[in-house]
Length: 388
Image 1 (cartoon, rainbow, N blue to C red):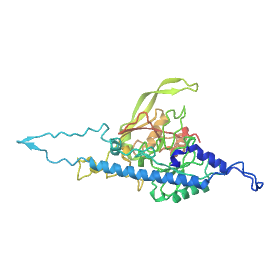
Image 2: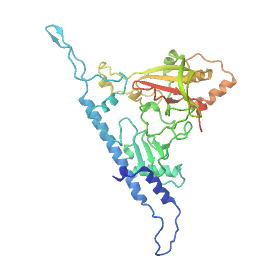
Image 3: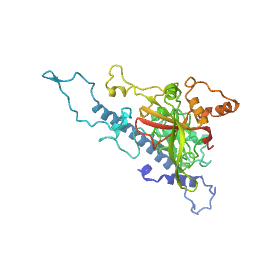
Image 4: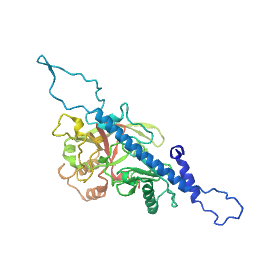
């Protein structure tokens, strides 16, 4: 299949060759020095690739559902008795190595018999391809984005797209996140560059609706030796519905971290930080309170967001970190919403700072090195960390 065997950097090279100015009327009999690439063939290649990816995703989800149905634990019935004594029935199933709140489907996909493909992974965003040469260069114009949407329609996958699917215009290039956009349900949305020059997920998307690792390695994360040495991705969360719980669990702690100097040496630094946590509990059916398998069909709506639900990957404990300064505490308290903390006596300077940082109160970074299933660590990102 050409879409798989052809290196991705070749698309950008051929697109550049196509966009190069050519002599309108060459001398008769002379062969053209530059061969014009077959743009239609390249576009059809990416359309076929996109259709294959969508088909593989449907197959993977179908296999996962069938595998889950065959391994559903029945609802506990009355215990078996023998001669009036209770009999403990032994189970041949291996206990789950993850937490109770871990992603139920993740454990299914990691077992024997699960669907495997280098193009599609369950609970990860698919990377769909289109081929639209951009005369404006690396930055796609509005007309180029509209043409990318038209390519998805020509591929016949427009009705199969979901919110959060990533579309890549391979004609732009394969460096960083060039040409990558996210489907919002109706249109393609560009990446946001406020906190990363490579681009991050746009604030129009609610990160609780996706698993914490949904965009991992699909939307690449840039590394900043000062602001983001670990290459942790940006997420957008509104934690005010759990403000009371965050206020009750707030602590001021000392933490040891390793930083890199401009000369490349590593230093161990002890600093103060505020740390708190809240819990997102999985739903349990009132008719089957002891059967977790029945609760997998239930979903928790995202507070104050109509039509979106919390992804099971967030079930468990969410640990929130903030700066250990007075400004960091004030920012954390503002994120928890009104009523979680007593009102502060603000002066003119603090009011101006609070108004300036109002737009960044939903911005966090997932701390990948600390997170695990059932325990997600996030760090509050303030306005001063903006790069653009």
